[in-house]
Image 1: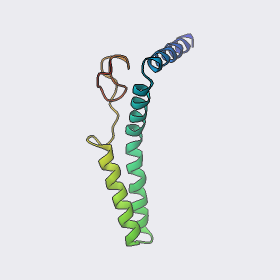
Image 2 (image 1 turned 90 degrees about the vertical axis):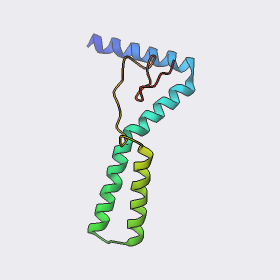
Image 3 (image 1 turned 135 degrees about the vertical axis):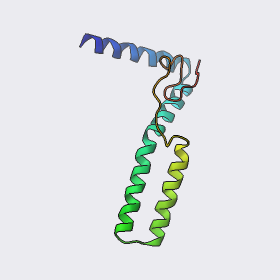
Image 4 (image 1 turned 120 degrees about the vertical axis):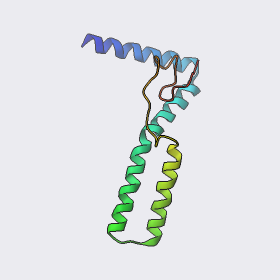
Length: 104
């Protein structure tokens, strides 16, 4: 358990240093990763709602609205369907959180 506590302490210190360096990069990277992680679930939600409406009321206005929402969610997810890529070559100091782009 000491290893987990030590790793958590180091992570907390690293994020604090990164925050002091440039909070905007931290907030941008964190929010971008959160959106990319949630993108597949948003698509699944709208797909389930669309199937539910097809099985139930079949209201054309609702079907159109859900189809447009699903298309917009898919387009916002971008290539790869919103999949989150693992860290490549180290931590956030050398690479982006989930995008693999250089930050420093």
